[in-house]
Length: 131
Image (cartoon, rainbow, N blue to C red):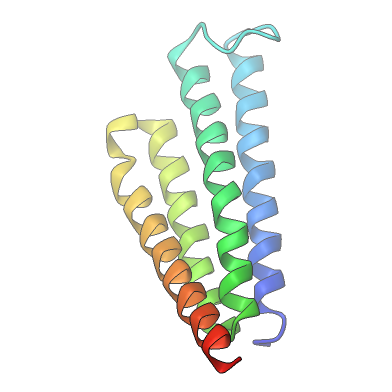
């Protein structure tokens, strides 16, 4: 199972991205926001920000996961990745309901990312020192 856990984390990240895209599309339809507009109703704007914030976060998440997994921390890096995914889902759901409640999910996802980054740096330094 541990061998496949990084792929599971990546798959969950893809599903998260699809979910935020779907939520934005549904909000665009619900609030009658015609493309290419990205403003016009607070409900749509929240969905748009959730999608964009998640996309922006994913750009640094995936390479960090790769570093942790590649340099010897497949299990722990993947577990930290699951924490990130959980935190991002929490963040998204909270933000869509009330933007002022998004902080805890953001902090959980940030903690997962920070652990992965630390694991990746430790693994890379260890590999470089080993020669």
